[in-house]
Length: 280
Image (cartoon, rainbow, N blue to C red; front, side, top):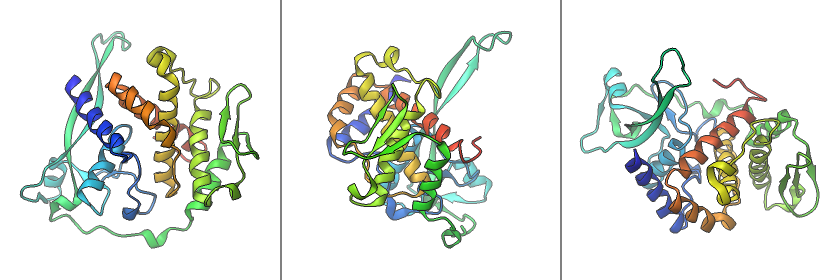
């Protein structure tokens, strides 16, 4: 398990040090509904740490698709993996109950398996490209999404921030940004903080991260914004520049930090999505 944490974390640290943000979406491969990695067999989106893992694989290999499946799923579709193809490792947490009479007596086991991009698979049934059926533009989708949260968002000034003591989000006016998509990307970042308020997810990172709680909180908000930008099809620039060194330091000292942050970012994104859609 420790080897898994270290392998994934070291890969992300290497990208951060090279100036490549692992959760920056490969927009050239945008499909309907954003660029979230999906399992091509089940239609389910991947979550948590698997999102940046699979985005990285798409970027470095130049895959034109964000759809994946396991070897077994390919075989079930009477398809086969192309010769020489290497799978991409993804992870999931499985809870094992040690006492059937008390489900709280359980442990979490980190499991791994490998998936293959559909470009690595031969003989799959043809995919239907339905991008022309999109009826809501990303900007309109973002407007509706943010409005559905009914968060107290106050426009004005020059600083974007969340004020937990008064539970509101402050944002500069839209015309202060280079373009509208950047406004929405920053708004989603701040809503990531808003979702963590004690009235909602009650996200307290002090016990988990100690003095590095602030860096972890910013990482969670940033990942949340990346996940939601991908979900909504927003190509906005995120606000990572000032935090990269802090994140590198955090990840070097804590090999599980990116896993925790990705999980909590998924929780935040799902919470925000729950205001306007049904989340499984």
